Length: 587
Image 1 (tube, rainbow, N blue to C red):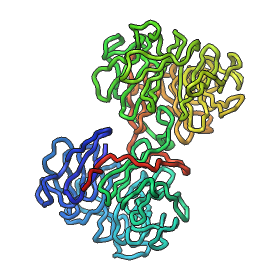
Image 2: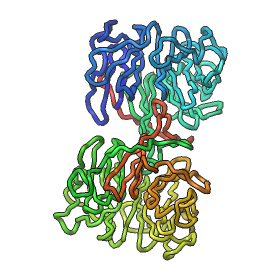
Image 3: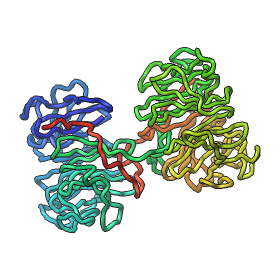
Image 4: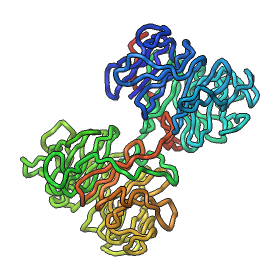
């Protein structure tokens, strides 16, 4: 969903994903100063705690809180401030840009007094000054980044600091890679790379932490930007750019990320709420549409729709976000040649909008074009599959549980290559024993839950043997042990998340660590034989429970607004042809 400050029309517009129209969610009653009006709003954020919009109502010199659903007027929360931009921290404290006073201020929730967190020493170009600041970004450590517009630079202010640090530009106005020209919107990722709307140069720059110059990531004839002013990531790493000159918002798509959301950046020592929310099943074991029976693998898409292999009911279920019951995904039970007898895993291949399903008993892999067909197509046969994944080229990776191997099948053909195991059942480094689930990262490294060896193995592309990355110390419940591991997901820093099934817990195993940590478990979580595991795009963990017939969501802790939690690698590339997602129909 895109919320954009439609400045000259005095309103906030909202565009839903895939929608062809937008709607007014605040203002829209002409420019003015009444409670139901806005006057040249310059920025907007969503307060998810209160489900309200917080709006920088620039010409009215106020900040307004406006109910998102059916709101007809707003309440002034800060007055007498020329606020050009704002953001919020995990405590609900507001950070605002005071463009007249050349400062950034922090307001505690419910209090009118503010603390200066950047600038505030008059207009100028010293390290303790700003000149016409425009946009602001706040990271997890409460470090403030400000686009210092008339100084043609971006400044970074550590919490409590008396002066800032130049992190981009500062070499005078210009179009060189070491320069900026009237920068506006900014976002910072978890490794400190700053993304900047370089408005005067009609480009978006990425400035790596500590670098003396930036790189152009969006710009030139293909992108055809016209005074880019606002910038935001979505949870998938796609960039959204507001263009002041062309009166639209464009989305520039990020490259492929592995299934089950390894693109999510999960910092070390992150926490999840231990009280889960049931998102599928949970109404006793059964075959009604609000029940599950022995669920195995699961997949969560970008809209938080859950797909689960409902093994005991011989079906695949689809549960929309917040739905009270699921829908049976057509699996051809009326067509014996394409029926599903024992689904153990599935993924949603978004490029073809199709579900790819492992059917262990029928020894096949079936593709179902999502919402388009009533019968599937067998794409692999005579393989006792259990888990599967897919890479950016469309190659399938399938667990051969009887062959104690993982096989890779090239896109569009039946050629296969063993990429893990395949040397008989055993516990040597070139062997597996009853492998269950897999994860394939961007480098085609394969991670396997080696169930009967009570370990997780990592196989580099082309390797002849694997590396133990979790467990391998015998079956047990110690922090250095696993007990029949199943679902696995790996994040961008190499931490492995594991459904430690017989220990009724989810473990996180940092790269290179000799033991893991329990991230979900104990009496509050009350897991009952967790099997499937997936992140959604927001870092929340979804767990399917074989014993209790349900899927639970465990919520991740707060992340900064505009998605700096997305891990963007230094060499990341975006498509240069944008998709218009708001406006674009003339002024």
